[in-house]
Length: 295
Image (cartoon, rainbow, N blue to C red; front, side, top):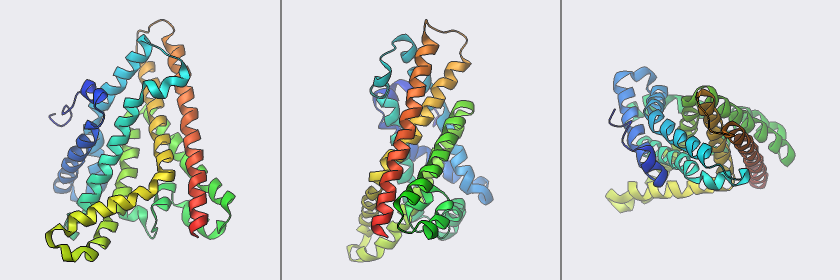
């Protein structure tokens, strides 16, 4: 109960950065509870517990946004500007989770790390690059079939990422926690990849003694910035899609409406979904260029 109400919806709306701190604290607590109570299933239950703990503040935040939208509707194309704080909240949650999972992957004992991150390790498999993990298992086959064909890569990445986006929208609409779980799952995979990089870098900083871990962790996070060109668009697409589904879901469950409220919100959510797919397409194009260039 304490963690669920650590920050109010109003404080988060004013200061979205608080969600990064919330995500770090909540994911860490959820991880240890899952490990000590359900060791065999700690990997997935850690994310599930995090999702459960985050639901209250995100639900209140989205309800707050839906009320603002209903009372003070604006021109549809300005939706992103009017709801930028919610987008920031999702982004900071994502970043906070990456930092949290990367940290714990790099410092936990091997036995505990194996249990806590078993599902993420299984998902990554033999995929060495983060772009493969984000785009799905089909990338391994595509790597052999596409070669240096940029259009082929674009089609594979766009199709896979679009399917994830559709799932995020549907989950957010019919089962709000599902979208949060999906975002947390993707963040955990990225965190594992960053954690692996930190462990590999630590050896090169052995001369710094006790500070080698801190320097290696910073270096690992810095390397993760290489994902920004395409990752920024892909993550934004998922966030925007999840918000669209959640807002229309909240509207559907309401019993009373302001004048023209439904029409305004539907127009905004349709526009949002269109923007989310545009982000996915742009991200796929950039990622295809990066893959072919580095091949």
